Image (tube, rainbow over all chains, first blue to last red; front, side, top):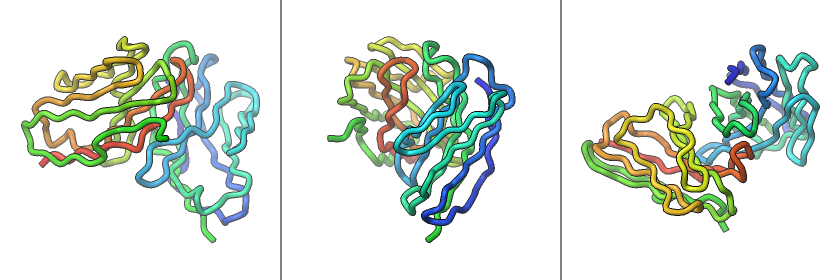
Length: 112
Length: 112
């Protein structure tokens, strides 16, 4: 699976949009981009995933560049409860098994 | 109702002992996983079962033996515990091999 690079930490103001970048320059054609987050002392929580097109759900939006070498997770209106470690993961085709490899992630602190 | 539940949440034991962690999911998923999160917070997959069949086994010592009595349960038994086994162990499940993962709250194992 392709490796990802994320900033180790970032701060965000409550009520503002949080834009979390992720580089995955070695991504291959059948690999999806997944985002999970882990709130302190809890299990990881799925946020969103995509292949080529931008995706949006009730939690966030995922913007994938045209060359697929990077992506951005957008939390439209960050709240204090969004404080967590956010993981960007690139993984093989869904049919091949869900062997997600978590890296260091980005520690996001939402401030009042 | 908790979707993925693990017991116990905390486990403190001596080196050399044998212990088990149990996991149950009520989501009707076919695939279950065990992940290990070490002191540096990296999450690594250990095992994955699909309909009681082992499909992922990530170079885990033989002291670790997963057991899936049915597709709703995946237990982890660890023999001859070592200090390096201290970690948080997360169980997860997914609808299909490539579906989003739902994680349990984790079981913190401390080996003294």
